[in-house]
Image (tube, rainbow, N blue to C red; front, top):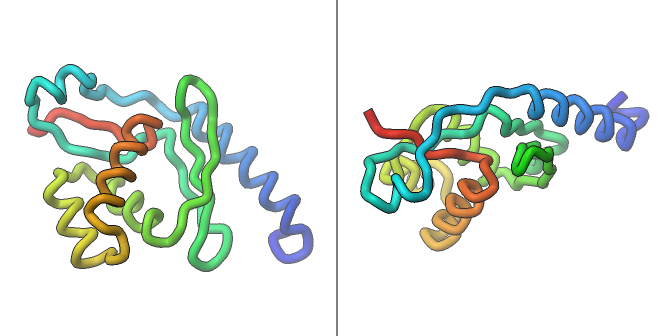
Amino acid sequence: MRKNASSLFLEALKDWMEIASENAGAPDQLTHEQIQSGTPFRVKAHPASLYKSTEPGNGILAYRHSEQTHFVVLDERKARLLDYLTRERSLDEIAEFTHTSNPGLSDEQLMATITEWIQNQIIYCLEAT
């Protein structure tokens, strides 16, 4: 299907990702106020955030925000970062990973990406244990 009807494949993939995202659980997460008050936290990919590579170097991310599923194309660097966040990570660990194993994002781009992803519920903050 991917070879012979790529647009049909993409639509079927997006339909599947939307269903899976809508049926994913909602994790316990820290509120904005808890983070601002200094509660130690870690970051993790939200269970409703699903990534699928569609071509070398790019893929589609489906995520649920405000009870709707959204889609965005991710480049390889951001896809690797999201994959890294499938496990709980501290901001220091994320910065170290970006500098050593996933170069190409500046510190400013990394923080902008993390902020955007938290706001869009692609990733979430949980209390550090």
